[in-house]
Structures are given as structure tokens and as C-alpha cells.
Amino acid sequence: MTIPVSTSAPAAIARTAPATRSPWRARLRRDAPLLLMTAPAALLLLLFHYAPTSGNLIAFQDYNPFLGESAFDAFLQSEWVGLANFQVLFADPAFWESLRNTLSITLSAANALPSGRPGRFKCSRRNL
Image (cartoon, rainbow, N blue to C red; front, side, top):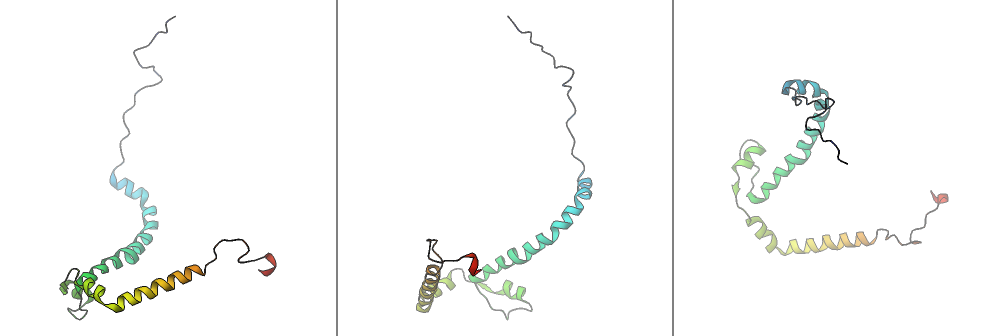
């Protein structure tokens, strides 16, 4: 028994023209309230994350805050020294002592945290 196969598309599956995108300005007008709601969050992200990150470049400069009329001018006019500041830092014995102290304080504080063993820190509803 053979099943007849149709080579033409059925009338129910009519081909339609591809959907065209609305113009950029129309989408902007449509999405304006959403963009206005996200603008404060985007500004806070720029202000408190990306702006301070650019200050990391000062570690590679012989930064002098008294150069120029503003902090930005001082940043631009300071001499680029590359890794010289880090060579001085790693050669200083006080750095290694402070690093050791910091790590020991961090590890001792981590040991003071609850370990999750039952019965170590007992707490009941009566004590709350």
C-alpha cells in the first residue's frame, strides 16, 4: 500500500512574508520607560565599579598627586614606571611580615567560625 505524497504545500500552510523589524526610533520610544528604569543602575555600576578600577593604573606610575590642577591631571602627568613599584614592595621585609600577619589573622578568624559539627554551638528556640 502506498501513501500519496503531495509536492505542493497545503493551503493551510501559506507562506507569509518575513516579519520586518520596527525602526530603531520606534523601538526606542516603545522601550523608553524600561531604559529610564535601568539608567540609575547603569550609572551606579559605572560610578562604583568601573571608575575605581581605572585607579589600578596608579600602581604602575610614579604617581604624584600634586602634579597638575586636578587629580586627573596628576594621573595623566605622572611618569609610567611599570613594575618598579612592585620590585620595591617585594624587596621590603616589612611587606612580608605584614603579609604573614594578615594571613595568620585570617586563618585564626576562619578557625573561629562554626565548623558545622553537631553539638558544637547549641541553640534552641528558648534561647532565641
